[in-house]
Length: 391
Image (cartoon, rainbow, N blue to C red; front, side):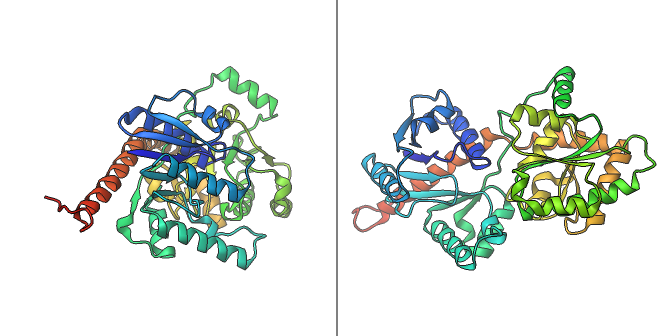
């Protein structure tokens, strides 16, 4: 088959990680199908060397929204593409070939942006509904996301396949002790700390994490190891989320909570490897990669018992009720005070990360492509127009 894949979001956080890892592994497992990667030269360059069955279908960056729509339509038609894979729910309005869509989560429907209107939210819902209903097949990154697609959009179960994500292959790296020390000194971090890393949105539940940390601090005043414990939050610029600063002030932990904006992967790995624990009390996740990243760096994890997190983390993390501040604080204190539990979580975390593989995911994606292609050929053979009947 000739398969087109939209790679124009390869530089974005989250979706870009999915695109990069999927394509690098499709290049390993599939030398039969031909792939046309839709994007500009900078998108293609991001992937590095690829085999000969991967080519570029060039679309310029500077085009307007509608020009991009028609450019994709014409390009896919001109190259006689058999199947188009859009690795996110923002698929084109017009699609002359069979469409496969990857849905990572339904957060834009369940937890809309704070500043969006009801009309904007409904328009976003309708657009996603149109995309998933028009797709030949939908890939969900977890069973939790699959259930959302069924419950929110009424999508038939037979049209959804669950193919789990895995750890970003660019992430696996261990820093020497001296390197970690230098990074921590640069960021003026000497005391033990609890770490959160990820986007900063209301559904990430960081206001409750801060409140739970304040409770934890009040209970550790007599513990010499953790008397100076800090909370490090890595994510978006704090200026966009002033309510978190107010939460810090109200909770009385101004001296113990620090916010960082974007942190590059090499630095982020140092933070993971140096943290006393990783806290991820999110109210909703389509998959949830940050806890797996922490586990890969031998850091014990506390996470929510909601959405996809129990499915992805299983018993390798301490799961708590994310809506209960005292339950979050209790879980953090338990990990910090129980050395045997910490060791157990670290070991189970390493085993849990090993369960997810981008190579396996790529193989399953190729199988889905083949099934769709074979299904269409069979339907054509059975059609009266074809003049033949399948044997």
